[in-house]
Picture (cartoon, rainbow, N blue to C red):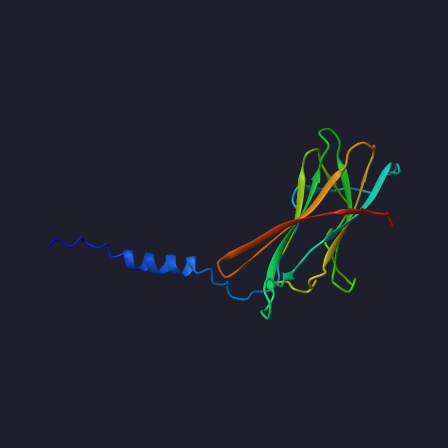
Length: 177
């Protein structure tokens, strides 16, 4: 009988593939926040903005997916999307709150401009559980003209063993401060 010749790399490759396929959690590391791109800091406007809005966005840093087990940790990406083809919007504040309503972090160092059809994102690692299951963002934005807006959503993702969990939460317009 003829036995196929084995590559010396086949066993290490197989072992590495099995480890990756098992979906083990990476080692603990400190929380990381990835700041926005596409935002350009601006000076305070000399003319008052015509549109001023505040948007509440629920975030879940963990969820229970079955009875009597530890919650699954989730990462969250806050997405701010300018829906205008022609005009910028101004992001005045992005505040991250915990389940008790305590401000954890003001994530925008200065008011910033988001150009037409552009997107800015803020990321919270799944290792950052400081917000709790009732964490939220408050996004304050403004515009020079009415008629267009800002789409505000958050994508949350994580995994429980080999099962992936992901969902989107949408921002809710609230009265401005």
